[in-house]
Image (tube, rainbow, N blue to C red):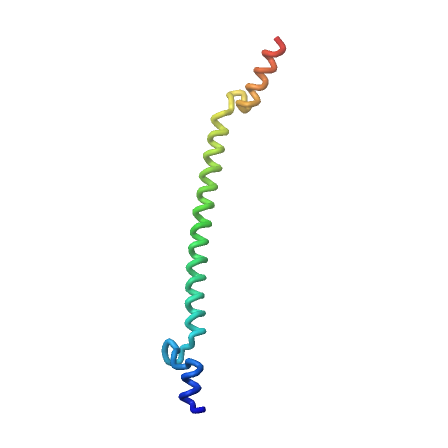
Length: 88
């Protein structure tokens, strides 16, 4: 077997460029893909956190609006009114 037969058989001429192996190219590609995934996940996480904070603020505002001047929440106030009317 000659060297050129070995090169032909094992595909050593199929390398992307001289001195760079296919494995190195695959690793670089996968590293770039994973870096993009991490960046996208981080951005998505920040967006999710912003949405959660906005929803919490909205719920707090709605909860504050439903309180009576007595400081009793609306549902408890209505229950007290129902009990008072039931006694009469």
